[in-house]
Length: 193
Image: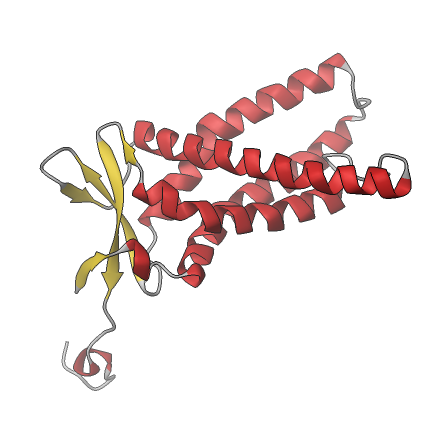
């Protein structure tokens, strides 16, 4: 049994579960890409590696990230599920199409990148002021910076997911449905099926 869930009921732990479902596949892809990039043996800053990074980023945004969003929206979470509400009739569906996932991906990525740049910019500025130099070992492809970026990304996702669900996109919006606990009879191992 499901019923509509208000954004006020969308707890931080629920948002964290959804953020995790969005972030971990991207973190795995980022790790694989970093390892593959290191195996190429091309020096950082070379034109070839810049083009490879650009092409990989475009593919990640338009193909992989949109798939991650569609996957995360289809999942059932312990207390809620996300639904797509289409048109003025309010048709509810569990699956997103590609343009819908692209809209949600764009919203999540630009807001996350903006906040992440502000936070990391302040962090690096403080380190620069305190130490007098750029912190060594914090290239964008180092394991330390990717780990910090991942943790920051999950936290930012969990903060902006309410805005992503509240937003009225072109032709659709997102909603939440509360997933009811199974009744005692249904949960009993001896109940007839």
